[in-house]
Amino acid sequence: MTDEFRPDADRLAALAEFAAGAGHEINNPLATIIGRAQQLLREEVDPTRRQSLAAIVSQAYRIRDMIGDVMAFARPPAPHRSVVDLAHLVRDAVAGLETDLHNLRCRILVETPASLPIVGDAAQIAMVTAELIRNAATALQPQGGPISVTVSAGKASALLQVADAGCGFSEQQRAHAFDPFFSGRQAGRGLGFGLCKVWQVVRNHDGELVIDSSPGGPTTVTVHWPLPAEGQVGACPAPANAPHRL
Image (cartoon, helix red, strand yellow):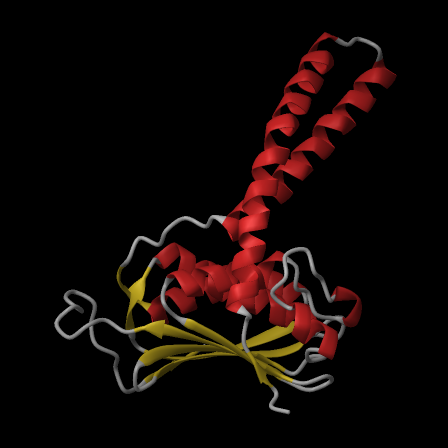
């Protein structure tokens, strides 16, 4: 059996449709609960009751945030496509995670060309990069370790690869890795909404997501991003030959 696996697009599309409907139905009564609880909190003077009402409001907002994740998976915003520099976006995403990675005892190794133009939404591509790095960092806990992030130009696409030497994907995780709410954190790898959101973004960019992993072994996640059409690059410079290392 090959160690590579890909998302089941048909199954995830069906899950997204269900999640969209469920999220909408839950949001409406939840908004009423939050509004009424906040009104009662403003009018209440008893300290014990105020504490209870504050807890209701806090937990209701937590549910709202979870529903937001559901909707981000089910109905992600359409990408605002333009020619962007994948190498620059990846380096910026890594820089934004440096403190968190240091606290998790993870050392990140980045290798990119000076520039590599692709077509996509800069904010969404940065989110994908950050989610994949966070997932790799979780897999390395509690000891920490190196994470490799590589950007390169393929024949028909630009490649973003994030690799770690963590616990790998078990058979159960391979089957459910992209399911909303599924988490393999007890086994050392955080999944949940991260990978399903990543899949939706990559799919909406006409890209491809491939995971190469086996139980107990290293893991490499590869994202194929579309290259600009000939003459589309414009102000974004062509990729340089010299790699950029951090």
